[in-house]
Structures are given as C-alpha cells and as structure tokens.
Length: 203
Image 1 (cartoon, rainbow, N blue to C red):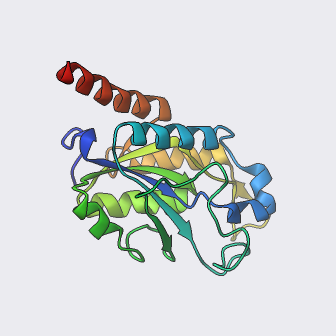
Image 2: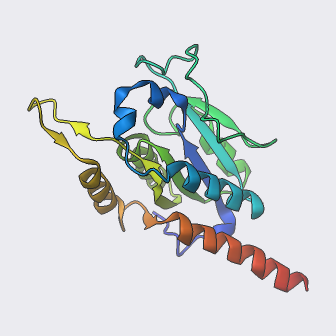
Image 3: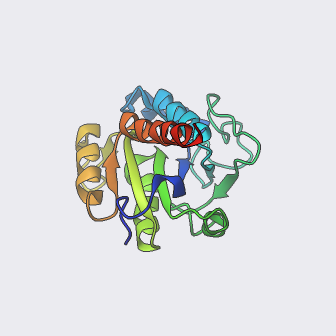
C-alpha cells in the first residue's frame, strides 16, 4: 500500500460518496453526527477545484427506502452541483470501485491518491478506503467530512453503538493501516499551499 507521504497531493482526487437526499427520508437523519458535514464537504470541493484536481461524485442505489433510482430523494444534496467534467457515478456496492468504472477513470487522470468524504463513515466511506488502499492508492480519510448515525445492535434489542464510538473505531481501524486520518482544515490548507507554491514558481 502506498502512503500519502509517498504520493504527492497533486496526484489526488476527491471522492464525494453518497451525499444524497436518500438518507434524509429515514428518521435516523435527525440523529446524525457532524452538523458541519455539508460545510466541510463544500470546502473540500472548492479547494480541489481551485487546485485543478478531480472531484468525483457517487450515488448509492439499493432496496432501502429512498435509494431506488426512481425515488425523488435519489439525488445529490442541494449544496452539491457537479461542475462540467466532474463525473457522477451510480453504484450498487458498499465500495466505489466494484460497481463503477472509477478505477479506469482514476488511471486515465493519473490519480494515485484519493481523499474520502461522504456518507456513511463506517460503511461506504470506510469500505472504499480499504479497497482503495488494497488497490495501491494512497488514501486521505477526511473524518470530519464524513457522516454517520448510531448503529443498532441487531443481536441485542435496545442496544446501539453511539456516533462517538463509531467515529473512534473507524479512525482506529483505518489509521496507519489503510489511510491517513485527516481533517477538512488540514487538507484544505495543504491544497491552498499547492496554489501558493505555483504562484511563487510563476513569479
């Protein structure tokens, strides 16, 4: 597995995973963590665009309420609007690779590093991070640009894993194994530094 220390940020793409209205039709939406999620994702989209780096969006389809492709909620949340040339993939697997042509798209763009954002933190986001690492990509997992909900314990009615525990366990599982755990502010600053460096070179 490559690390972010081995692959420059100039070879990165931003993956915006399943940031779709489908989640809002479930009552659990009221119990989501990270109320800064939308602002953080928007910050990173703007930072990647400013750096001239790829932004790629995904929608997830399955049999759950709101996730059928013909459901009115099956669309990107309103704060997102892909720019020309920014692809939107439709997937049916928990990771973003298996049911799309993401791999070919990244290869064609010379991308060897991906930044993970989206919903849900410990499901499609984490699974994508793990698969990306196994495929040889360096991975930035932007923890505060992902979102999750309490997880019901199906074997013990009434019990659940809270969002703080989900967040902690996700970071523990991925850190130094599959991804660099980072923040919106840190990654946005690194992207801004690329622009500043280019401006100095041009001068």
